[in-house]
Length: 145
Image 1: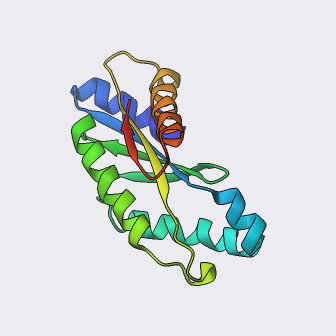
Image 2: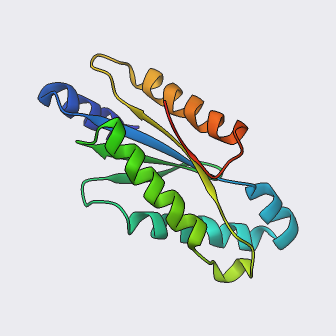
């Protein structure tokens, strides 16, 4: 939250875009239930490394909770963040994780761009609604909010 507040202040001051992206691992509970918590924990360590490889140095990834992650994308418009999220979604879908055997992993992405003067809670709520729209729409997709 500290990083998010700092980047929001910078975006407001500079009049620059700032987007956020929630990432949620699809069917994570079933991974834990069928393959065990050790496999789930390994995925939670491996997935961020995979995602980070597709980010710029100024982008800020973080664990949001459970199987959710949050990306802060300074200087990135909604269109740019959506394009990045789609690249990351495809990367996750193609990846193979040693501890999961043949099981494919997918993720759903909810993306929102900060509106000038918007509270952080409203920005995060829009990204969260986009994420849940993606979950409701079948998962393994990017939804812009």
